[in-house]
Length: 109
Length: 112
Image (cartoon, rainbow over all chains, first blue to last red; front, side, top):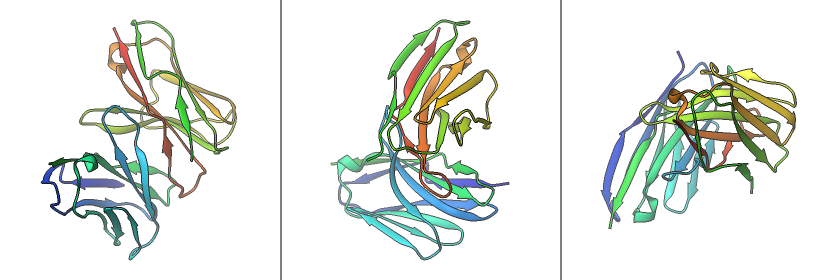
């Protein structure tokens, strides 16, 4: 069964303390992996698409990487405004999109 | 930038009412989606549409229907609202294939 698992469920960091969020997947064939940011009471905001193992994308303090089994969202020197829930989603060869349950990230000043 | 607009941010209705949630996108996207999001359950797909007048059931279609009369507009209908349909409803659109979905800001619906 296709599955997307994100870890940890919640992460609290000090401002400037770098870390990584994990998205592991088991799907019938990966056609694309997406990262989103969601602020409380708002819809998910698209961040990155990754299509093949070894691919990397960067935006400000965020960097997404992809292997054949998982993706990481690396956050370098985070600021309080990076606090949000980060969602991962996978588009499979069965033309189905599967969302993970998200990681709630909190950055303390 | 893609803009997906949902007609209401907050909505309060009574059980048994017929409820309409509207969504409009301005990027000529082929595909549109309706999700609900509940704490601990994540995003669950209710219905989606690949073309005008076309609809497909998602994972939890029971109690819902949809309408897509124009390419840019996708409506979610709760035929007879029940308290277990209290939730955050999110609309999304995409170009199709392995292209990302773009979301609206959601409608927080309360059924009393």
